[in-house]
Image (tube, rainbow, N blue to C red):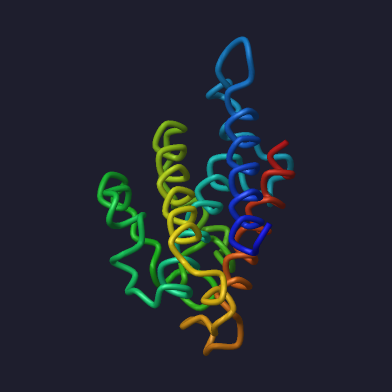
Amino acid sequence: MNANEVLIDLLDDNQRRLKRMLKPQPGPFPEACLGYQPDPGANNITVTLWHMGRLFDLFLNQFVLGQPAAEEAWFRGGFAACYSYNPLGLGQDGWGTLNGYTPDEVRAMPVFSLEDLLAYLDQVYAEVRAYLLETPEADLFLPAPGFEGRFTRYQVIQMALMDNIRHLGELY
């Protein structure tokens, strides 16, 4: 396996596990569980799912591809407009990914439907997968446009993927 195939394998496995967790057999995931918080200071399932897609979206589009925020799936896919929610300027470095949000900023987030969150995650995962399929392995080890070039494209994708894997563990 080359570097692209390793990342694709982990991405696909995480997506499969996420879908299996959210749609256990024989019935669908109970919608009432989406607001569950294990602790008053913790994020609920909906917010965590949104963060998983949002961080990967930002990392791929801005930090790997060097595109403006408007090119992120959150905006391009109509999700920001649908929920009237533009997270830019919030949290750590103004990324709007949930990292560094205040409790008030988390409470001000809209309630996302599971269907829309899964559509958003599917779109982001598909875009990351397409990028990995189309990119020569050697290009993954070039400096990424984001983070002032301190990390390679491989490392930036790996960071977002590992974040998604950790959060899937939290959701379980």
